[in-house]
Image (cartoon, rainbow, N blue to C red; front, side, top):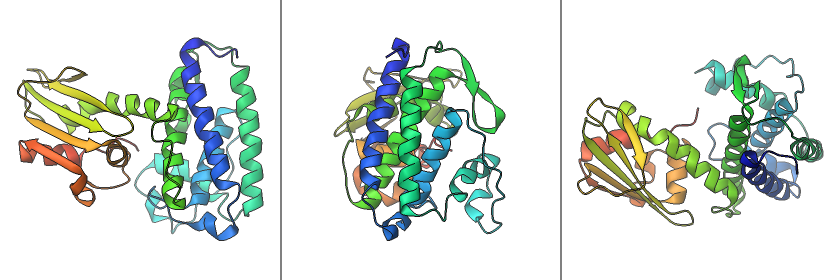
Amino acid sequence: MTVHPSLQNYADAWTHSIEAISELVSPLVEGEWNRRTPCPAWSVRDIVSHIIGMECEMLGDPRPIHTLPRDLFHVQRSEFARYMETQVDVRRHHTSPEMVAELEYTVIRRSRQLRNESRAPETMVPAPLGAQQTLENALRFRAFDVWVHEQDLRAALGQPGNLDSPGAIVTRDLLLDALPKVVAKNAGAPPNSAVVVDVHGPVEFLRTVRVDQDGRGTIDGSPSLGPLVTLALDWETYVRLACGRVRADQVAEHIKVEGDQELAAAILREFAVTP
């Protein structure tokens, strides 16, 4: 491996999840590709198409020239959604063998790229919508993205698993990075307050978001003696909420709330952090 040490865990997590996805979809018959997934508006085929498309972009392949149908109402909300949908819609009529073959070929190419990767983590590489990002952020997000979509596929196909895999740990850290903004800015937790999130299950952690006197949020692993709110939930529910797969009222039986009920409700309304 020539991947820089700080990138290796992302490469390993990506590899673990992408291989799991290949194993999940390779035996599917045609009709199973149309199953709905927890990812809003996307089927099994759509998710695999998205993964293929994003990995092709990491390889530097040109984006397909494709006009989206006007009746795809779920992409009308943002330019980012339309950007992501192009790689999906262009493959909507591909057959099962075509999908499997393209996925396998793309995985081979990307795996070779990662094995030969010699660029520094801070190297700037293309991001969606013509933006730029560091190579480290790009690989981190790809590891996150494929693990979350692996879970989408598992839910659709009734094959749970890998909730504590390397990709789950990358996902935990990425989602926790967003938690201070959720609590302090989006939900409006008052200055000089603390909110505790206690997660149990395959991935366990306790984190405290502290809001300073200027309304800025930070996060640490130390418990708070007097939190304004404590949220206790299982890891799978945490992921589903943070990735916008469910609303809090749909999984209320899996969430234990203590403290300020109004603030807790505001936090749970703002919990989704994925585009």
